[in-house]
Image (cartoon, rainbow, N blue to C red):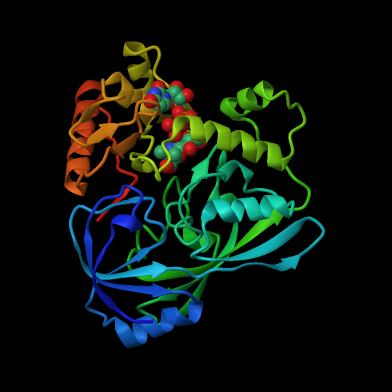
Length: 337
Ligand code: EPU
């Protein structure tokens, strides 16, 4: 384990943006977390933990230490009649974890198939898709606390999960580094196909009694058809969150725009940001090497050689235009560094 200097981050972020890390270190075990913080990084130096860089945008070089988390391992640690408890290292690729679970007939993660990123990044933004969020599956996690200088355990409640949000993005941002996560998965499965897109895909495939494997395959098919593969086109999935508005504001919007797409979320309404961006005329837009994806307007793309600043500039233009047309603020989901 050693600090390397001036390392290009281009291969370490799914936007494929070129930026340089002043210092860079790779860790491959939970024990090395302690070593990194006691021996290599002094408290005043900023650090950034990288999984697969699938939810961040570098707008310039990183002046601190980038810690590449490559803690591996997937193990069954406990079970009862209904559940298995699976421990996974923070560096495990999320989709490989999903496929591993499905091959062992451990259920719950199937709706989250093909989400880019790692186990360690998943709790930070409470990844979610097709009616399931990570918070529904996470039992607990262990992380290094740089203030307490020790490993600490977080229960599901301690993580304070919200929509694409958690304590790790808020109060504990830059304070803890996730080392491993324990999931509580099912032996007797509850198939969640409430989402219209999954039902349509299963019907298309002639499947009426889907298994968790069928649901995973359906989600893979849907995602592959709508979302660009970061290996081919630089992107970070949804760039913005779906904005939450009051029922009253929604009613007003609905009067002006009867086609507005929204879903009830508790007592408020969640607007489909993709719809707002498309209506504002951005879907399929490209200028130079940045663009707004033509099959899902919520995704910004690097068409080759874009800088983080150029992508951020497009994001800000989209925000301003959606605000101007609908009076709705779009909040970025991607972590801008
Ligand atoms: N829509 C449009 N135009 C577009 C895109 C979407 O009109 O260009 C409308 C359509 O009516 C569509 C609806 O918006 O039916 C919803 O679109 P979609 O099912 O693609 O879902 P989303 O709300 O845009 C969210 C998540 C995705 C997740 C999907 C499926 C957020 C920010 N994004 O997208 O997560 O995969 O639901 O559950 O919540 C991610 O976070 O990176 C991500 C991809």
